[in-house]
Image (cartoon, rainbow over all chains, first blue to last red; front, side, top):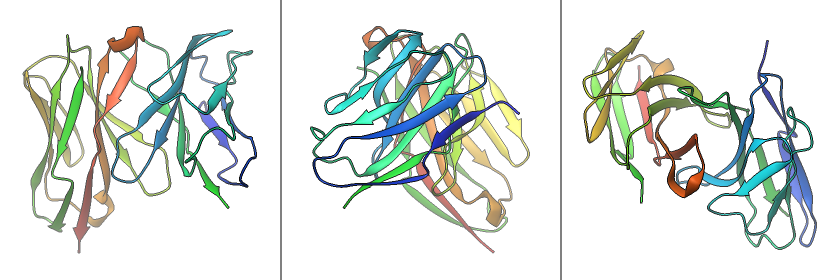
Length: 112
Length: 113
């Protein structure tokens, strides 16, 4: 079955480390998104990509970086510049038009 | 600026006690309103898309309706397995990102047996 796979499910980061969250989809969707979810807040957009080799900053891009070298993959790197990275990270994709998003199962990142 | 507000923040129901969740929105040209269900520790699961005022969609015990300013998610005779957070989102072109969804903070629903 087609879907979005996020890995790992849980990730622990030490202070000063960069970590990379994986997002892979086999839905043949052009557009992919990274959201951050914190308790009591809505999903906030970090980065999005509407086509391979192109991506744009979302509302809270500082301290994060992405790449889109393949249609299927949209990894997110949480850099040491992100001061409060502990959160639940969600990757999504859409075929566009009138369709909504399909979400992955999320990665919970904790700073230790 | 486009905005989505959901109420109540949390709702506790007895099994079989019907109720409604509210999603109020302001958007420059609605291009779709979406309802999602999210279980703890998981990604949101798509429920409905609504596009125009007066539109209604149903799925099992859930019915979503849309007006020009808000959407309701009606839950009829809920069961404990309906317990989850329900998220509302609107599609926006704000900031130049086509297909961007703006999410509300969700309603946490607990259905007690």
